[in-house]
Image (cartoon, rainbow, N blue to C red):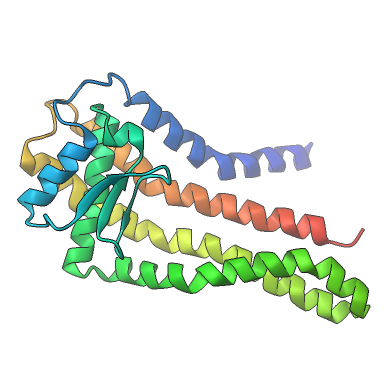
Amino acid sequence: MAYIILLLALLGAIFGPSLWVRRVMARYSEPTDRYPLTGGELARDLLHGLRLGDITVETTESGDHYDPDAGAVRLSPQHYSGRSLTAVTIAAHEVGHAVQHAAGYGPLLWRQRLVKATRRTQQLGAGMLMAMPVVAGMTRAPGVALLMVLGGLLSVGSGALVHLVTLPTEWDASFGRAMPLLERSGHLRRGDRFHARRILTAAALTYVAQSLASLLNVWTWFRMLRPG
């Protein structure tokens, strides 16, 4: 019974933040015509007011994000074209990252370097994990297999590290940049401040949820590769 309770608590800790984030985003996606500007239009207006007109605003199927290399705020279709509170608030959050980049915000620059450093490491780690049974069978050397498992798990686990160190950057984009922008610009409707803060909290915690999911992925690999 204790094992079941522990397992349920673990699953709740892993999937709870992700479920809460989705619930908050969905709740404030209605009504779809709450604001006169779409998320894409609001992002352009905020960037223009900040004299960051060289930053482009684009739609993407890869999820809402700011690309520092391309100098582009990228929004999912529902947020780019939507007029809901979620759409405009998420747009402001991504503009917040553009502001961080323009200001040379240290944690954002460190995250960018870390993402680049771990991208190939993650691919290499996944390849090592998949190749491990073949290599172990050919060499019949347990030590080689153990090294490949450890290296692979560390490489895959680096994704969790990236997501965790991202949290301060996301929090600053939400409450150090986006919230003041929405308030000063006058775009936020009366009475929406509390709800916008909930959305911005969810936007920041998205990476916590992804980090926990990455840790679960590491644990799954370990279970698959453990002898017996």
